[in-house]
Amino acid sequence: KQEVTQIPAALSVPEGENLVLNCSFTDSAIYNLQWFRQDPGKGLTSLLLIQSSQREQTSGRLNASLDKSSGRSTLYIAASQPGDSATYLCAVLNTGTASKLTFGTGTRLQVTL
Amino acid sequence: KAGVTQTPRYLIKTRGQQVTLSCSPISGHRSVSWYQQTPGQGLQFLFEYFSETQRNKGNFPGRFSGRQFSNSRSEMNVSTLELGDSALYLCASSAGGPTGELFFGEGSRLTVL
Image 1 (tube, rainbow over the protein chains, first blue to last red):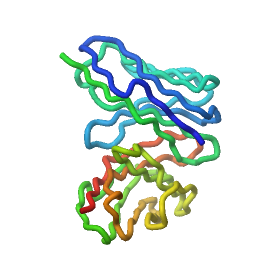
Image 2: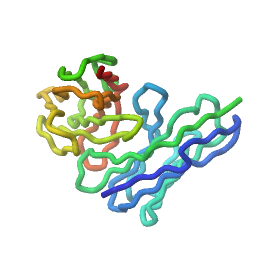
Image 3: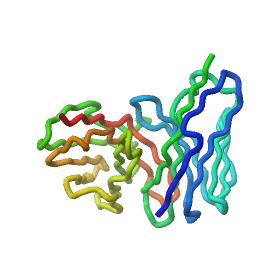
Image 4: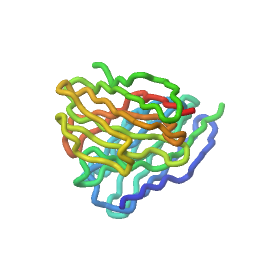
């Protein structure tokens, strides 16, 4: 059974800092890994999708890496802004499970002025 | 291009009642999946439909059911509501391929009194 863990559970940083969020998973038989952002009371916004054959994906100030063999992914946020404050979730799609994502518990990020 | 639309956004029910939630996927997407999000359990997979067929199902009791129509719109129903069913119910759509990206709606917030 796939298990996804995110560390840290919460993080507070001053504006302008670069930061790294971690995601680990126990079963490396995945199709892809997706990072999401969730604002309070809202749905999920897809940030980056990394296919199992890829090592990293970039979008603006965000960079996500994937090491499938070790079961790890990181989300790097450069030059953080108060608007980045949200909960960040990673989710993996295992092979043979159609659209069934297994989610981590999330990292709650607060970027202070 | 319109995103995933979920209705209603908020609803309050009492124990024993039943509820139906609706999800309209992104145009052209044939896969719709449903997730339940609670503070204690996080995000958990309910079921997924593709071309009107249930393709995958999570570990929820039979009170939770769903269906998909020929236009890919989906509904989920929860019968005999319990207090523990209070949650944010999220719908996601994708093109349906095994490596596809999932896009989520804003969710339906259900409160059971």
